[in-house]
Length: 286
Ligand SMILES: NC(=O)c1ccc[n+]([C@@H]2O[C@H](COP(=O)([O-])OP(=O)(O)OC[C@H]3O[C@@H](n4cnc5c(N)ncnc54)[C@H](O)[C@@H]3O)[C@@H](O)[C@H]2O)c1
Image (cartoon, rainbow, N blue to C red; front, side, top):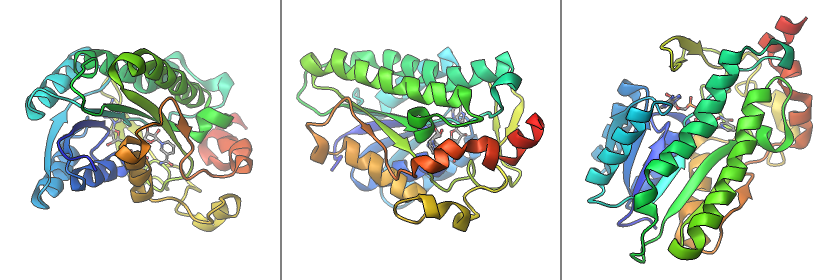
């Protein structure tokens, strides 16, 4: 479905981004794995290349201007002068109750989920504002926290909601003349290292410090959550990657400016929020 196309997938080293990259490559797309984690980015690119796909890893921090420029340049070289798809997927949350959130925490999350996707789209503008008759599509990965809010996630919820406005604006600016489609996919519950019990995994913040990911009581305790999920199971990264593929595929050629709440979990879960379910945030407040 994506033969002849080239895609940048940020946060493509693991989790949802890696599965999306693998699934895109199986559909004939050249993929650029853009991630801050060099070892995992290389590994995912190797997996794709070893099964006959075409991938490169471009290591960098998506919140740094120079890394964004380098990413677009490498993508264009790999794509033979063209770029068709951007999936803005890199991210994590840094949760706390509102009254405890520090400026650094706030700025980090907004910069990662809003400013970085905007800057990447802006840097890639010359390759999207073209009239060559080929499909072009931008996907911003949001969250049901951005649609319903989520206690303990003020910064993340605001940032993920912000992506919806950015996406609709891209659809309106680049749709009429260039036929570029832009859509948001807002995930509910997908089992990745972010949403399972901490296992020593971390992400590197822009200042170089390490941020542990995962939370106790997460989706590995599946039975706790599934009652509020219409399909009665936690989604897998493969489910998530397929939803993104659907959005960029020719089957959705007339769909733009939309928010797909893929693998939605019930609103009940979200209004319960992480202050109740996220042990760390709860104990910090009390
Ligand atoms: N897992 C879920 O249930 C869920 C639900 C809703 C939304 N999301 C969103 O989906 C996206 C992917 O999450 P995931 O669960 O696959 O997480 P993940 O941790 O498995 O993957 C995220 C990737 O982003 C990379 N990354 C983080 N900061 C970066 C930076 N500054 N520059 C470059 N790369 C960076 C990480 O190294 C990692 O490889 C995120 O935007 C997340 O907020 C996830």
